[in-house]
Image 1 (cartoon, helix red, strand yellow):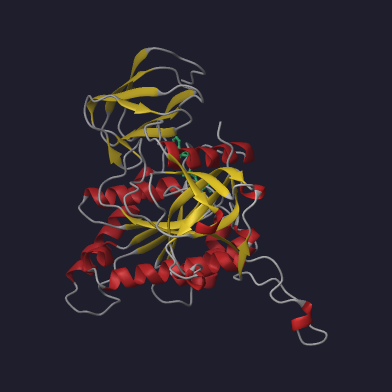
Image 2 (cartoon, helix red, strand yellow):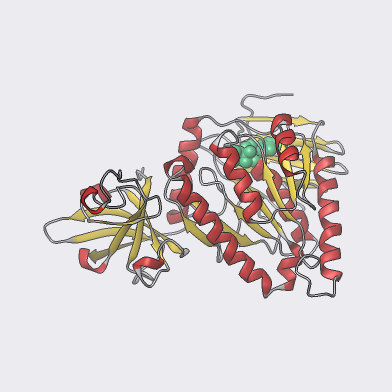
Length: 429
Ligand code: ATP
């Protein structure tokens, strides 16, 4: 039963292995609670009887393995129950990963291969449910006491931090259905653009840096090594997008490739990876519940992510407005611009854009409404290989007084004077 717009409190009874799919309207939130039975949202169990508040625009499903009754309070954009889902195949994948984690944990040898848990990479076209499947696999693993690492390579619609970044974070508890991935201490690298085509080489460099850093962390941590990782990727799977997938599989030494919703991609990856030992390429069905998002919706959700970074999910954070002198900050752009002036090149050579060249950027009005990353670098030449501490948002540039006003999550001095600018902007509304 599809109801385009239903209001007030009502109960929905779910049969075993079915789900209630819900789209929260753009302007109101929705309350929901579990009344009887057991149910989960993308792998995380619902607490009995406690009302949960789902913010505007959220799209999710309440799935039950054995049957449940849920109660909703408020309007939905859309809600319906579905009894055909790919959940059994997803949980079967989880069971296989679980076996591998146990084997890795039990391996007494220091052999890095046998003590390494599964490194799962989830690939597929846009809107195939990659983020959602990643989330379920992580939450199911966390429920059983593992601390798998979530790696998000999706710079457009990532779920760890703001857009334009690749990031990783350990998942120690099932992911909260409302709050999402916990933001305690993610390892974040700033690419600065919402699509990799702006600078494909830089994207690869950052993926390598992230992988190198995680490899180092794993080598000293048998627990997270055995738990393994789940890597979410972008929906760009053609041409360079496909090349970037292969690059990610290779760079992270992925040993399980889960292909969602596209036969062709699955068969291409299976063929190209068949000579590599120990990589399983598994085809999985896309859920009928995945909601397609057009360019406008994606842009909107990127803005929301940035807003959420500064103001919290429900306006529960208050960012600080700070003022700095131009001289206290050093802004850089990575890539673009010719590598060397023509005069410095051998005769006949054409200047080429060096994708990883660090270009100093002078502070002026162009930085108004721009989101900048604050690097952990101590020196400019460390900027590309450094992760970032967080982000600031420029709200005023006073050329005369040489002062810049910016929003930051907290007051006080920035952890570094080195800032990175990309093409990420935001208009506060
Ligand atoms: P992208 O390529 O843009 O990163 P994706 O393949 O990662 O997309 P998801 O983000 O997992 O796709 O899913 C798209 C949207 O559909 C999300 O809002 C998600 O919450 C929603 N969704 C996924 N599965 C279901 C479901 N079974 N019922 C309802 N909504 C769902």
